[in-house]
Length: 169
Image 1 (cartoon, rainbow, N blue to C red):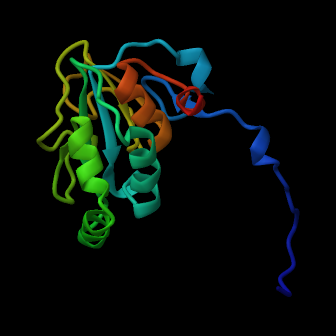
Image 2 (cartoon, one colour):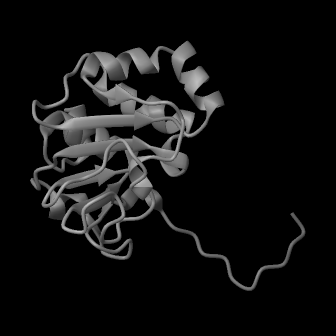
Image 3 (cartoon, rainbow, N blue to C red):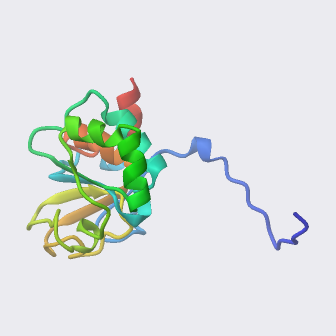
């Protein structure tokens, strides 16, 4: 409260559009509408970065009573055992499974190319993880887009990068 700051910057975040980091750099950021329509093979919600309970709640809200687009894989990996158990108690895991997602135990996985969710050549993934470097999730010929849990959930439903605000209509 009594701290002294060199500079205070206030940003009205309500005017920001949903963002997406395009391949192959986290700095290659665009408004989601600029990448809208890119077909995705896989959508990944989770990891230590965006697998918190509030992230899973938001994704489940979009996915509730919906089905993942045929031909699109949706993986959900809660950030921790505690988050997994909370999501289980709240019925979020059931929502994901009914939508067609594969729910995995909390672990490092697709975001670092560890095991489940590895991408093949020319596959496209939209992910809530924190890196999209070449070869990060499997093949060096795959393309990784980074986005919010809401954007990833919306994209899983349509099979292409989708502005989550379109799902509210």
